[in-house]
Amino acid sequence: MLETGSPAPDVVLEDTDGKTVRLADYQGRHAVLVYFMRATSCPVCARHVQDLIRRRDEFAAGNVQVLVAVPEDRQAAAAWKAKRQIPFPVLTGRRTTPHEVIGLSRKVFGSLQQSGSVLIDSQGIVRHAHGATMPTSAYDRKGITAAVQAFRAGG
Image 1 (tube, rainbow, N blue to C red):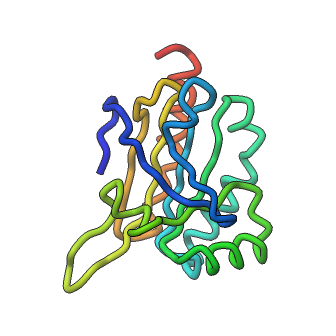
Image 2: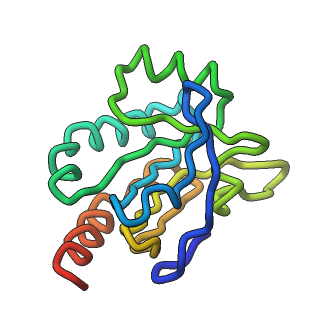
């Protein structure tokens, strides 16, 4: 998992239209909050995404671009995004899952997909990183809010 205060890695993902998305492309323009869903079929993760949607004006005011990363392939991700009317870009991995790229996979009796969030400021520094095996504890709403407030205040 990424460490708060460290430079963000140059993660390369793909959106549901097949376009390449590099987190580094947001540097100098926006902070980026990436929510990593355990799976599009996870009802707890879906509730977390709904909270992000409800808070989108708050994120926009903080110049934060919200992205949702899913472990499914592009077609499944596109269908899920359309059905749920997700207003944010939904990302998938190109050769591996987005979760593996940042360390949100664990090997426990096979592979276990974790969920969590990463907030990267406009300078490319990780301001918040949180992951969990259980989806109920993977969305750190208070931690995300505190991190956004801290970098907006210049901290």
